[in-house]
Length: 247
Image 1 (spheres, rainbow, N blue to C red):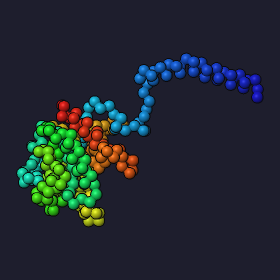
Image 2 (image 1 turned 180 degrees about the vertical axis):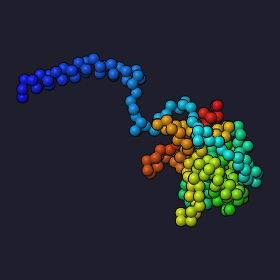
Image 3 (image 1 turned 180 degrees about the horizontal axis):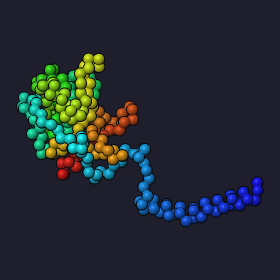
């Protein structure tokens, strides 16, 4: 090795040493003071978001998404429309009473949410059956009894099938459809939608600043995670309901 090469290595080492002496303590100090924030976007989640962040709107073509008018009959035989939810924060879902898979999980979680807002008349739940031919008012009333649905603003609704599917797929952007090849004959999303007092769909944002749009309805707080490692969002939904109620 030549002397010139040795001098080059010595020069590089000196630069590294000077950098370490001058800059590393400053960087450490800035991190300690919160001036430098590590980018945890790869491993972060919506659970890491600060709870006082403002909830986002679901924007379609640059406009905030508002739930369109609807009118159906509930488990008590009363006609319920979107006007009955005006001035209320509510959670919406699409289900059917003979569902053999995710609906029981969803509605056990809804009952859990009901318990947190049982005495709040500014809160409600809208459950729309996607099998209205079977789910009559009598069937829905029995289902309400079975699941201990007691909140006066929790309406299990049935009506015209085409109108319900239009409301699901276009009004809420929550998928629902008939499929004779799946167990139960219907397939649908296990998500919940959160609607504010003015009828707009709201949600918190993900780690990239985009709205999560919906909340997973099939994993309970108690479970924490499902078999695929997906984390529950019922706790987040409860927090966000409280935010909207306070607005």
